[in-house]
Length: 355
Image (cartoon, rainbow, N blue to C red; front, side, top):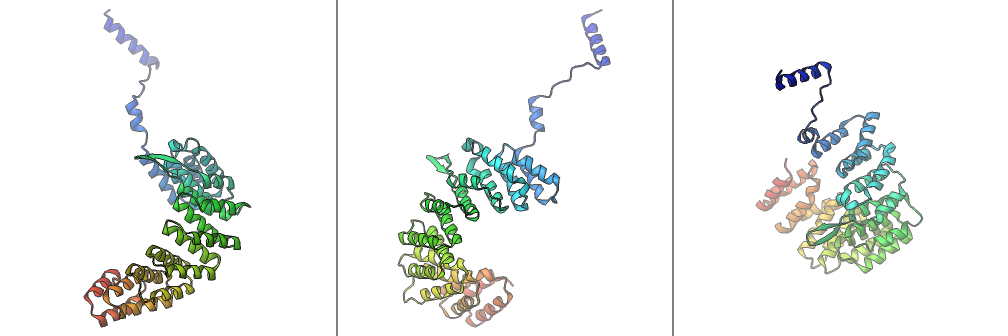
């Protein structure tokens, strides 16, 4: 018997007895079968449309425990949106895991930020997690050096801690008012406004007097002051509106707009009536009036559209765009356009207020 026939015979007996060794799949075959990160993320996002059930909770719990910060972040967002308080403990455990070697495990703090927002949305008392978040700094490499990517995390944690209200909250907020990142300083100002105590108002007054290199932070401080002490906030906002510095005036106008208080219109109108007002500040004041969405400032803007030169009237028309859904307002503007017969204003009206 030839060697080949003997080999064939042995193979035949092995197959017959069921002991043929299975062929192992190649690495390429294994990789081809493994879903990509994009596919896994798409699968997790589909859970947003699922009805509440033990299976949904279990799927999110598994995803929250995933090594991928993007998978965990997406699952945390869904858990927060659904208010699944039973997932609070897994979320806190995941947060602790992503604090280990965070630059490698959680770039841009995506998972940690989503977890803090989810826990806060659930109104969960995760004080320790919020405390760690409020002081976390994560320097990540960028072209030419490093950059702290944890500012949004610290900002979110400050607002969460304000809800939890630990005994040393004011100390935490004072430290945050001098944070290197403007987003954190702004969040601290918002938090002080939410606290609303006399001490919080005094801290905000001091910060406003000292100033900030970023107009957005000054605006947040004024917003906080308006919430904590309305009369004092209005006084300070009026002072800033009288400033010769346009960014400072714009910051005050936006703070008044966000207050949505009728008293804010009086301060804005006083600013408008100044003999000399730079055009950028005119634009900011008119926009702030539009953002108030109150009858008196809306009527004022309509008068500006009807009576002021086209360049200024166009700014008022732009400020009213935020209320473009109001059919009665559109009708009033259409009447003004018919009377003014300004091609510039008519063109803008047709674009911003489609009928």
